[in-house]
Length: 612
Image (tube, rainbow, N blue to C red; front, side, top):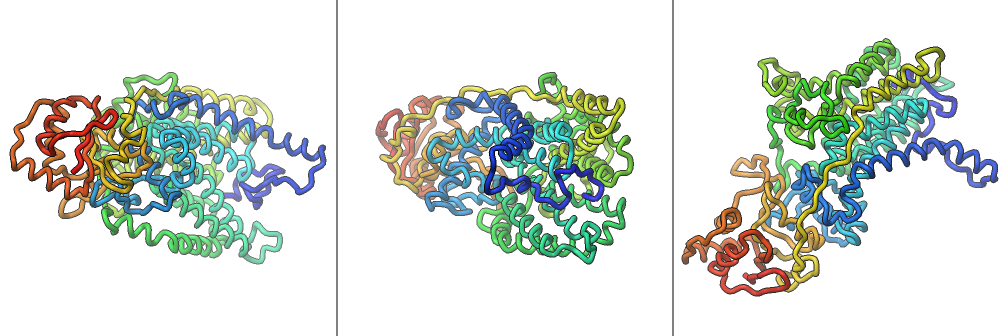
């Protein structure tokens, strides 16, 4: 891959991408000014990315606790709970099987997209300011951080012109898929380690190629080993951030590596022994750390080995590829019918970008890196179409390439339409290569190509994400009165109980830093005798009764059988207390039902409680 990349004079092929241009120990004023000047452009680009990310997410600020992403509030409640649970690692109260939800069975955090690494990293923020602040911060940081990381890769490893690199990085960080996934899917937008992984693979390839050394007497073993160790560390970290992103990245790199070997067989012959050895070393080191967590994920308690989402439902509509995202400033809400929801506008690139990208690919010719990007983009784009091609909302009889992967272990856990997310950096790389070639050349192309790229990206300029006010939490929770109801680590039953469709009671636990557990809830876990992956769990009779009252109101007939069942269910949950906020819809009906089940209530702040 690297042998075909243009290299700027200040970006040697074998230099460290992320550690380049380190400040010397002693700086004269003149050298300091020179260093600042060299980094000024990069800092400016980074600040622009941060500003754009802040603009897109500004609806969550300045009080994230009272604001919610309007297009996907349920998942936001889920991720805020994840962050609260992750933060407990700082208190020494953390396990991959948490007992703070789905009591008494618990929830397998590896089976769920719990962004463990991010939650632990930002635990101080969560414990000091609350999980909603951490969520808003990550929503912003993932967008800006991904763009900055790709900018560094393009400028340092690829040696691209800064203007070309900025255009490509903007697409990587703020493309339609990234913006739509920002609607509460933190595990999909945390992609800032992907460029690091790519750089380490490229560094490993360069070190393994004897032709890249002055002596040409074999691979640079020290650099091979250091690259493998770094790759193992990055891959391990990404597993605890977002496994789906890692899977898509690995599959894309595999397709590109095979393509590159075909287009440059000389490089493949020279570098294969050292490169393969380095990859084996990286895989072995990563498995030393990941073997147990991965076993726990698939075969541990409350783990699942299959996917729960239908690839037929989560398939990209072919027409969506040349449609502009509804979340862009020029997008149309009518296009939303071409996907499953506002968090999955992964393929909405628009015809201008597709047209310009095609022209750039043709202009770049048979350059190995360009060919690899084209093949990778076509492969991942084709896989996004799912088992059967869908066109304008109609499922056709034409089989999609995804049929070849359907049913494979692990693979069936990935949604086909998300394969399209891998096309963003591939398309961006083609645009960067073309714009860089034009900017370093002369003639009309010097202005025409970068201008065409910019014009193609303009329709994708995202609009701020819609936000809304969310109901305030009861003082019973925010003021800590819950401690009069349940001991830390105990189980509190909020009424109504949380469900995948209505997870709002989980906000109680989030506001209390997940200091208490609760039954049922919103999570992925095994269901039934076969342990098939499912969202949530079965409802016990008392929970089902309370859910029905919360939905319809009224006073159900309660007899001794229901009271015995209520006591049995509370005992199964290990509950210490049942709580009902006074402003809950149908609160009077729920209170009457609970008093028939558990006896007279006690008022604490703005909640009624029953100690069970």
